[in-house]
Length: 430
Image 1: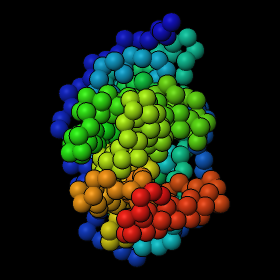
Image 2: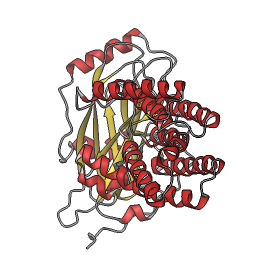
Image 3: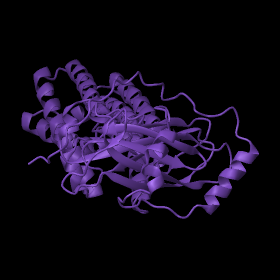
Image 4: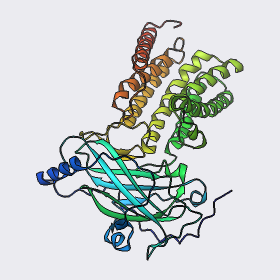
């Protein structure tokens, strides 16, 4: 049964959003500002995300609230553009704060203080009356650990799941990088709030994986038609492989993270789970239909790699599999759904590698459609896995095992060398 909620005030008209890549940096950061920044960091206590509690009086008075400026380029509340996400339970509040890091210096911890009051009138900021004992104010401190300098513009998103349903006016401060700023907005469906952030396109990963699956299936159908295999059989086989692959992507994610809450959301899938499940389904299907399994595994390789190249673009746009924060020349601004900043573009590098390998394997097949065994699959997939393992240290999330990576790299490199030798000598089987 849905919770009783007070009637919300109508949402004011929102102007067009500013370019998220517009810099907020001053013309320069002098030594005095850096010194002031470091002194304040040294003096600040070690902060952590605190439970909900009543804020200090100075932050809840009308005078203090009015003293804070409003600037949608520097602070905004997560907004659910689809009305259905505004009324579903459970609810949460998302707050994004944007600032510039100092140009130089060592990494630092940045505590961000956020306070909020539930309101019923946007213009007067009249506080809401308590409903069934639910809190109408909150105060949290969220700390960004080891934030590098020289990143330029950074966007930090904090979620407040304790915020009761309704409209809130929030104020944030992170001395000396963020002066007192404020914004107002409503709560939304918590699973949506948990993945929404500046620079993140909701649903980008499943959309790009679907596009990649379609593109890969078309390439497979074209190559299969060149060797006289029934197009109808290939269509049904590709469709079944994609459907089972989507289930495998979710199950792989749950097995790796053990996060059952993600089972109820559209987020939380792994591309490698999709590849494993779809390939297994493909092999079983060829056996059932009486088709040449090894030949079709070779023919599916270019399409499979094209699908992975497009899928990694979805990772980049959706905020997963991100690289480490970096101020390097080739760093690209992207978000991990919590911190948006310049990062090593691991998803783009992996996507580029998959595309190059797709072209190489396509040329091999066009030269010899009946390449021995599954040598083309071993070459393309083995090389992709090898590149993927080499890129893992550049990701922001460290791997959980120390032995898994070298073992996988050894197996993948062996497969590439063996497949290359088979293709070179024209052997009849692996």
